[in-house]
Image (cartoon, rainbow, N blue to C red; front, side):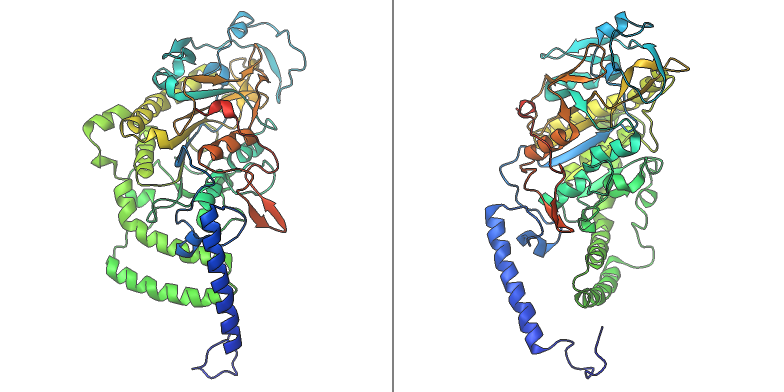
Length: 478
């Protein structure tokens, strides 16, 4: 607040205060140089790149395999025993009680439910994949299937947050927020972290891509990809009254006032986020229009991806990754599409049919453009599903966090490899179990980040994506 006793033409702080602030600033800049030279990504030390902006590229801890991440999120929990984890014993016991003790499920379940889908071997590796993902299976030699994933609880909300934010109970930054905080982004005219979810928000909404206590510049930018028109896909992307030059002059004035406001309030993080968001919104007017315009693609590429929302989402994802966006998360849709407690055969076939061609095309496209080696792709949901049928319909499966499947492709991953195993019926991870914290630690490692060193000081404690857990799964790395 300005002191009214000062004449209007006098500075709002004294010479001594100015020197004090300047001295601190010089010291912090020197520290930034040292930390940058050491490749440090710790706490809130001022990295040199932060002087240029929060999303400016930052050096990793060590040479990375991958530079960007694409998370294909099958929210609701796809059934692992119907997709990437074949269980012939389950088919043998179909309709019978399983010879297994301590099979605890969230809801009432009945007899064994053998998969209605056929599995067969693919590629030189011979990995077995369900007919649901026949086209994706052509890429198994580039894919590492983790068949021994496990989470903490069988409920959507905490499991979604665990997979996305590393904690199922408390507000924590999302994986995309951590990654853009640690590495910045290679394109300053687009968000570093983009989220696509058609038809509205999924369960627990924006908490899935929140920045929490990290600065707001690192949170995900949400797009409702049910829309095909740019103006509906990104609200207010164009100004119908002012030219870009007029908008720039207007924004310069607003930002000058905002910065004065910020300085008077001890560099409040929320105000700083607003300033950054104004600048990004202005720059996006030209860059985003180009990035999301898939009509620029060749007829061959459009036909390769196919029709439908997921094809459009993944084609836009490739265009974003191509332009240097650090993290893109692509959702199946609002709600829990894969949460098939009944009519699983019909619903899983429909959902996989909407994804299979698009995923196969996306992986092909990345590979042909030389981008798969530096793009880490993750496929999976928040948990799996039970090997037994759920009552009363006996044609669906309940939630199962004890064992499920995710897969990784590209970005230094060991292709054609199946890691770990669930038991004979697919209920529990029994061989080389991989917790969600281990998955996060491994993904960060592939991006050149030591998950124990990527920290942020908040409320007197250093936080990290993997909390105080997580181990890098070396077998998944090529």
